[in-house]
Image 1 (cartoon, rainbow, N blue to C red):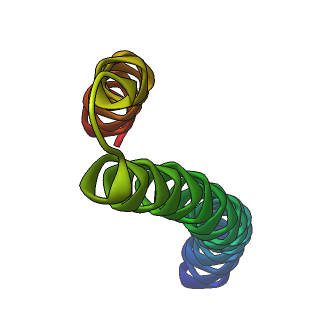
Image 2 (cartoon, rainbow, N blue to C red):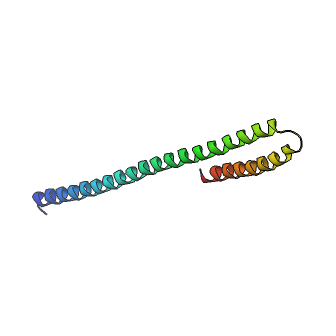
Image 3 (cartoon, rainbow, N blue to C red):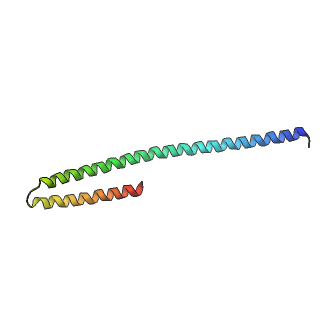
Length: 100
């Protein structure tokens, strides 16, 4: 085999490797873009979940205030609502923990 043929073969091989490396880099870039997009979606999802949990917590606070200001037998009715709200908030937090 002539030296020129070996040089051409080497150059062709290098071009093939460089082309493959460019493909790999493009795939890496696509994966990174997907990951960033997923993170942004997760951030939005986390924020939405945090807001929902905050609303539920505020509802609990309001019900607790009602309980504090209830008198006589009325506090039993308030307590039932508070118990249901408590269960709802606990369930929401458990689901959030499991999801994230």
